[in-house]
Image (cartoon, rainbow, N blue to C red; front, side):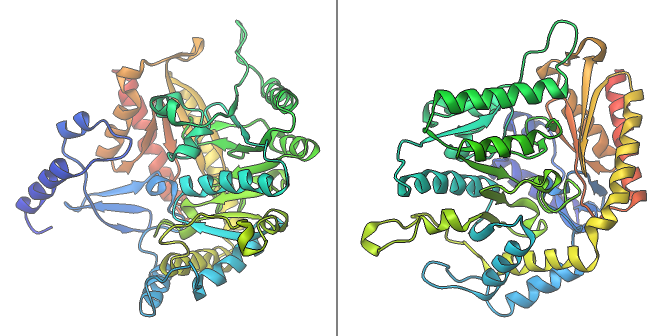
Length: 452
């Protein structure tokens, strides 16, 4: 930007015309926004030239940093050929190549790729595929899905129906289809439930639901290892594996929502790989196109795909599609994204960063108002509390998480609060010194805000 007038115009237009997601716009209008102009590696740069570490990977999407030369080149090369052509009745080269590559890097048995444009639609597609699969298998009574408390699978109606965050979804309850939510155990008077108790409770609850609704369950859906928007909540070790075995034993489909956990975020390419789980359907988005363009994929097995094959007049077709399905620009960037993982051996190299991240995060327990630190790979949630000793949270209306993020912004880092949980999820390519800067800023911001 060349002068102050340009900035003032942009701020005015933003407030006059934009409606921001997950934002109370009355609060937004009271402050001047940070307006991002460009990105350089792990940094975002605003219109005044201020630099901020992108501590949330631009909503959990950015993998290799902003303005990456190889990703830029892949996008530009594809743009010189074609920006978009439909996948309805036709195909295109990057979409085909990416489909082959996704089959190669996902768990064995996932061989069919259905493209869309974001995590919500990837989940919506998974639910519709699972529902219709049972119709074709002669079991039309299978219409119910089991899901978990605090789950977040997106904001479309189907995705909300299998969500578990009341503040996000309660307004729309009358629109949502019936599902079965599994809640965690209530803590006893003396302590929180242990991980083993939580795991046993969840598995028993799922088993009871499968018995109570025998033959009516279409699938079980969950975020593997860590629930994101629900508060960066960790699953008990071994839970995913045992749930997978239970689903197979009770002959229902397992859907893993890897929108957040996929593409190296947990330290492996896919979260389900930590427990050697092979789901029936896997949903991918966010990191798929390295934070460059909207792209998602719902990936499933030959068994499910083959159930949709039939004569034209049988109407077994999966009647679902998006205008920009398999967009060549997005698919070209996604191919280069995977190529960078491979040629740089990123997952191997990432292990050192993950260990450092984990070690440094333990320092946050020295702050008197940090009640819990939850970390999985390069994803972490730092929960601040009014009284950690007695598990007393700060009041919702105190906006403590928002206050921490505002202080961090003044010190050069962009963070995101989930009420009183501060999310840290930087680009995977962040260097150790950059990561230390991010952690130092976060520590100071929490300290400043909770001392007031």
